[in-house]
Image (cartoon, rainbow, N blue to C red):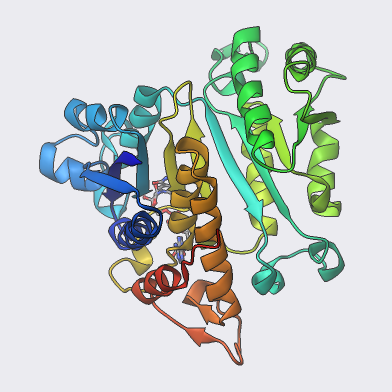
Length: 363
Ligand code: NAD
């Protein structure tokens, strides 16, 4: 198979971590007979320096016309004095809008080798943590009207939460499709005991369930879900929820797994073309030192293979290689415990090379 990937290295540690993911993709291509054709795209601070804009029309076009986009990270102190709509992060917002991605998908997975990094009790972690939060990205209260007024006595504010059935249906489908590629359990999270938007949400999810008889749908109120994520995270496979609930729950979920450098993400819309990136930023404090953890980006590439290219075995192959390298005792500094007896600290480039070396076809 041949796939075109738009590659955005971005700023800070972006170029270092993306190069390691590309090493891994090259080797996957070799092992499975695929050709990944990469096109460089400038976005963020480097694009401001080069083209005077965080994302030019021409660069956006390259992304939209690709089969998927792999992104490192953007941003840094150098560009913080610029007005908000000229900053590197504006490139990312324009990219999401231009690609029409409305769903953000973040796995919360604990690697058994890193279990000690979780703030949860060992007895909870030992049951396993491996779920994905599918969050609606461009609707709900963050995108409704916001206003503040003063009636002469007191100031008041309002923020409107609005969803229509179509917006709920399209994110619901991503939830069901994601569950289909995993353990086939979908938990729909809302606040239907209080909010009309949530009652509509629940109705649409139950209507869709008829089309996905292989997926088991359950409902959960968001306040209970926040508790269950720390009490019994092993119960979850895929959680689907609206924008604000997803924003809060996905940060909670990433905390319980330990390290920010390990977590990938995808953003999807109506086409197979997705945006894949680690959840962390450009980490200017460690840029250029060859100490960043490239695993979040490498696992983002694995998500791209699974969710955009239907390359299930190839994605498994990358995840198994990460598992093997962690089993081998190799750690970047962010996941190296104090003392770290029997473990070996490696840099960003060596971690990428090790994962590449551990890639093995099992079929
Ligand atoms: P950050 O995620 O870049 O860094 C937070 C902390 O985590 C830092 O100590 C950093 O060294 C560490 N860290 C992050 N990724 C790591 C990795 N792969 N390996 C090891 N350690 C890692 O967040 P920040 O410092 O708040 O933001 C820095 C810049 O990144 C800002 O300009 C911000 O706007 C931007 N940002 C970009 C994105 C994106 O491109 N999607 C997301 C968040 C922040």
